[in-house]
Image (cartoon, rainbow, N blue to C red):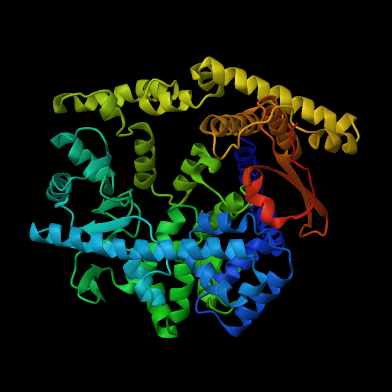
Length: 577
């Protein structure tokens, strides 16, 4: 809620002030983000390698949150490749996590190729021409390595008019259609074909989502849809041994990435990294031809905004944009894209999401991308007439116009929690979840809350030496080992669940020390001994940070995920009477 309000405040500021604030914010980028941006530059130079080593050696990187930042922007394989030469200064646990993610991505790339080839063969045998958008073929063309680019969904582009045939083929192959999920009558198919861009499928065989495109962008009035035209120059081939996949030409792929990223508000830097790498590989003549092609398709503002953002983030050299391109980047449409992207990144600490941005800011941004009435009417129509209404009100095709009248009612039902999505939201409500718990779990949570509250008060009111003296006092009962006694192990897990649940969802904030004390007290009541460790470390701002974690029978119970980052200075003894 605070992030959304901050976004609305930033968007209401004057453009000049907003641009100055963004420029200032860029100069104050965190060390984590500067390291990520240096790691994703391609090809990496000696200067980049020196900057990476300096940032790693500066000890200003928050390694605990760095993998999550890389995962959000979907650039983990690139980051791992760039950090490997500086492995000596990178924490071993972080490097191991990045290496595991990169290895998993490489394996996923192999499975992607296998499934994509199978699907393409399946569709082509039925006479459906198909091309592959982005994905592993784009990674091969940009980085000469299928596993360097983060592997996402399988995006297939078919010729318009073959959607129904392709849909029947995939459904017959065991896929289930997720979007639209409702039954498709002939009238609904025509509506979706006109106002949508793809069908989305899932299969129980693997974890890939299949996006079957017949148009590049959802809004048919969005310039750039002609990039997918099925003319003679709209297809190239990428070879992976015996596997041959048809793809868009590289210049069209570049322009598609520019528009695709602009429509998403550049929430992730994955496609921006592709654009920067491609732009650096083009000659001056190719860049000029790309600008002419973008002007021809009416998407020059999106291209200029993408390159300007890449320049501001130092993904391309400062002189990579020509004077005409710089002038285009200062235009209204390009500035609209850049201002929105910077606003959301600043408001959400460079890990923006569409949920964090809010529904209305997203629609306002999409409306502002183009001034044409037909374009904006299409956006409004998609807001008012969502296809999910087909699933709630299954009308015959003869009554299809009634959906325009039923749409407001469906909107109310959806947001009041009657629809499946609304019911799921209601079930996530804390009070509803509390009522659904069995009685013994409620009492356990109440015990955990009382223990946490007493522990927090004790830390404020009592000397620490008294607390440690109590921690080291023997456990009255002589329990069996939690690792060998199933009943004892079950009690340990229940205590862990209760303490973490109250700490996460409770009305008060409880850090690691009260959590460890509360869990220790609850385990003592059950005759189970535990050992508490107290550690310290220096943070990036040279401040002394402390952390507490709890161990039961040589197994981390609480706080173990951060224990390796701290040097233990005291551990309680574990004895029993």
